[in-house]
Amino acid sequence: MPLTNHFDLFGGQPHLPRRVLLVEAARGAAAVYVCLYHVNLIGHLAESFKWGKILFYPFIFGQQVVFLFFFLSGFSIHYSSHNRPLETIGGIGHYYYLRLRRIYPIFLMAVGLSIALGALTSFLGIISEVPRHRGWQDLFFDLVFMGDIHGGGWHPELANNGALWSLSYEIPYYLVYPLFWRYCKKLGIERTFLFALLGSIVFILADCVQANHVSNVFSLYWLWACGALMAEWKFTDKSFNISPVAYYFVVFLCYAVSQSAEAVANPVIHWNLDSLVIGVVIFSTFICFQPMLISKRILAAGGIITLMFASLWVTRNVPTWGRHVFLTARLVLAAGFLAWFVVTGKNIASVCRILARPFLKAGAISYALYVIHTPILFFMTDILHYSGVSIYWLPVVLLVIFPMAWWLEVQFQPYSASWLDRMRAKLTGVFRPAPNPLT
Image (cartoon, rainbow, N blue to C red):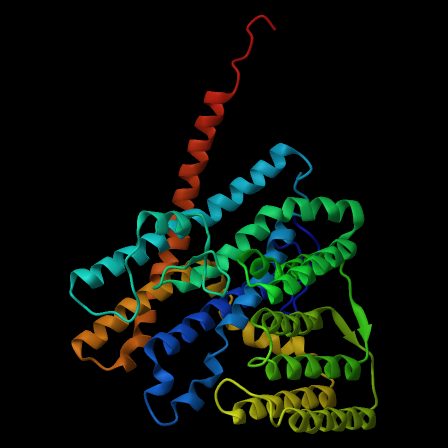
């Protein structure tokens, strides 16, 4: 991985890190959140008592957090591959090998665990909420990352490990990255990102006409490319001097539109509206706000509140998933927080750092945590129901999931990587021509 001078995004001094700490912490926070999201979803905890829907409402945004993973993935890949020789066949092959070595061993363990726990459920005679039987053809599609849970998907994902759908999106992004890298060197990162954005818009329009897996995947490619764009900005220490009023008005408008469109827009359009909000918020890490008098800040906060009331009036009859009061609450809370940011002169990035910091260590096990937690949660939910034990015990299962993820990342992954390196070296030696003794 390349080393580069930049500031620690947690606010430290310049140093030469291998990774950006905020990105690692955000990855850990996202993985933990997805686990909590699935605990609520699989265990139906929100429906289990009177105030459950309100209490667990903050944990219903799992798909949006997966979109954050796409951004973080684009950032990490471009950050680590910025100076790789991807203009050569050998360099591209080595890049693909490193991606395979990082992803596939733990992925195989996750697929095997999903199938084994499904088989064990059937063996114990436990009636499960989800079908677990997979044929050989199903297994083939699972192993080549063709599963999807969205409309137009070519093949359904493992029923007890639907979280793997995101890999069927990220793998194509990895595959086309050498082309993205090549155009970055030739045209510059900004122009390359614009081409990626235009391509995504074409796929969004195609998906609106007929939902299909390719359009599902590449309609979100711009978000992955946006992560790569910001990684490039990080290399060059780029920053933008922007009015906080303009920025926070844009944030609120993007958020209001995305939340209001959740039940009325085409799913792929709603995904991209949510992704736009994520991109705008992350952009705050590159912003230096222009100074403002306190009187102007208060006036701007009043403008945001006014914009909130206008949004509430416009959306008063807009259909929503669930009760309309939740949409109203989201808009009110968003306006309140943004007005506070404007008045205090704080950057939203400072809050992101504070929220992400405790999850820095979880970033190291985020991949394994993400791919193994759902089959275990489904299995234990079935066991609890079968045994007559309260489903409220389901969160305790996380105490098993986290150590398993740690073992996979810290023990199993280095061993498998070492083994693959040895096998690759042997194969290289077999196919390499023998030296000519006469030369």
